[in-house]
Image 1: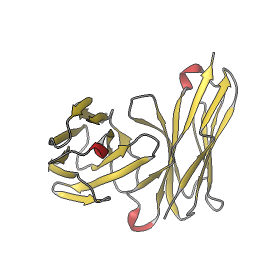
Image 2: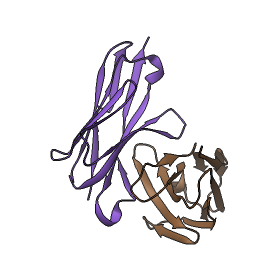
Image 3: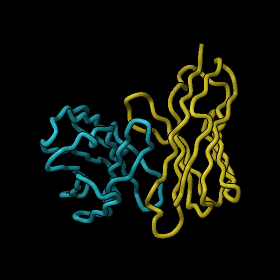
Image 4: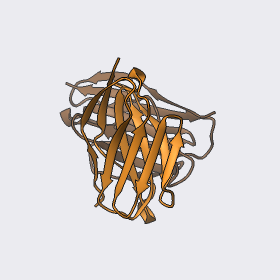
Length: 114
Length: 112
């Protein structure tokens, strides 16, 4: 059974700092991995999708990497801003017949202080 | 562009009452549709998945059911709510199996 862990559970940084959020998963037979952002009381916003054959994806100040063999992904946020404050969720999609299903971590609550 | 709507945004219901949450998607056809629940202190849990009208897969045995009466409409229901049904319910869509999922704004359900 796939399990996804996100460390740290919470992170507080000053504005302008570069930071890394970590995601690990137990079953390396994944189809792809998706990073989301969730603001309090809101739905999820998709940030990046990395296919299993890719090593990284970039969107603006965000860069996500994937090391499938070691079961790890990182989300790098450059030059953090107060508007980046939110919960960041990692979700993996297994290969095979269950590739419709996302397994989520519990998220990292990021606070960027002005 | 595609948009996903959910209503109501919030709902407070007594134990034993019925439930109907609605999700609609605009700007796409034949989407894959999903219902998730996010409970306090727990990760998102997939409840139901649908690849087409009338085609529903249940992921977790529970007090809830889902229906898809139209291509872009997905409904979550219960005949009798339990306290444990409280949570944040999220609808999502994707073009195909395994592709990027996009989420709606969610419905906050409180069962008293």
